[in-house]
Figure (cartoon, rainbow, N blue to C red):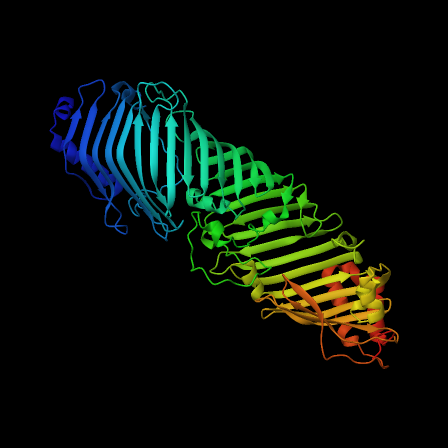
Length: 639
């Protein structure tokens, strides 16, 4: 029988190869050239010419694999030990087409319903037998991935200089275009001759894909079993989110980055214990791991920054990158470039829903020191959990030198439009730490408390705000205000504006201050705006358009006693959230007269608002006194 097999004609071997490949893949295979098999040798040899494997029925009408000529010799001794070693493999003009559609079907997945073949884990490591002499010429590769929005066209070749023993004897070269941008791969490895399964094998690789640059030194502990390897790497680029096109990981948008570490693979898990680098001007370091043996890959990380530049959080929080910055990246524009839009304060970059649904994550981050140009900031801490399209930041905390802004943010990205819930609090914030660049001291002193509780839907922070519902409330239970600051709202020309020009720093007591806004219909509407000082009660009204971010607010100071030269005219706050403008509303001047004002209706909700922010505030002596005076009509401004 063995002799019969050994003497079988080439037509038998052609039939057998076609039959077995077709049975294993479920697709037609063909060989239109010569097939030779030499068994009577210590290194049996196989030659196949004109092999082709058809594509999936739903894919491009072309072969998935086509090879002009394939030659291989295998060590008979290694076969008997069940650890095959190939002394030589030569492949001429291979052409490979890889495709994945929007539903997740991949033409390299040969599992079929009803056949007992389970769906392949696309992250499963390759187990390549030892090859001691490899040659690949005129290779081409095309790839189209509708999920990652990726297209690739390239060429590949492998050659080895057997006359040298240096670490660059093996040379693999690849070039082409990835999403229309230049792609280049250069791999230099140790000589293959003499490679044994029990001895490590090392190579250096450099990848350039548009703005992304990767340099790595890889050691495979058991050639060429890619289930266990170690790779020291350096990675740089314009936006870490674009690494998605190469890895499938939904990483956040970032400023330009430079990262390094040592990646260790153990079958379906990866870890980097010495991760470090820079995101913008901020340092980052820590440990991270990736588990690909799940329904969705999961990223786990514990990261820290010694010095965080708060501006570097703009991109992760949703600020759009400029077209110039994204022009040389792998990102593909999804919509035509629109005409210039007004500058917005709230970030308007869309959340990549498909990416978020494709992985899970558990990330903790701590910044020990924070640099912020417009506000004092001490530390930042957050714990992010991503589970099946549900994103939770709890806690999300920004610590000031005195006080904290903290709470939770939850985003449900399972539906067509993300739904967001926000519940954040300002706790024990000392206003004295907010000092202008000019002037001797802070215009306000005291404690600021507040709460933001909003719900909305939208693909960006700005779009969510446009249709958000909820409440925003700020409270100053007790403090001091520069007299000029307080009197300005009353338009006391002699003592208000004059004091500011003279930088007079006399203070006036703030007995209680409450600012509350109701969100709905794309607007923030002021429901209560009250600042009670020693001599002036400031009240306000108006709204903020959350779509255009336009401000339409007015404040009016009512003196608690008659004063000369006082003109009661509202102070207006116009412009936008990004560029507010303070002015005087024309045509509203009126001389002061007597007469009590019934402000009970205005102040009635204050007690509930105080409880909304902090239950203890409802018992605050100053704010409680203001509420009580309103109810009794005492010591209120006169008209």
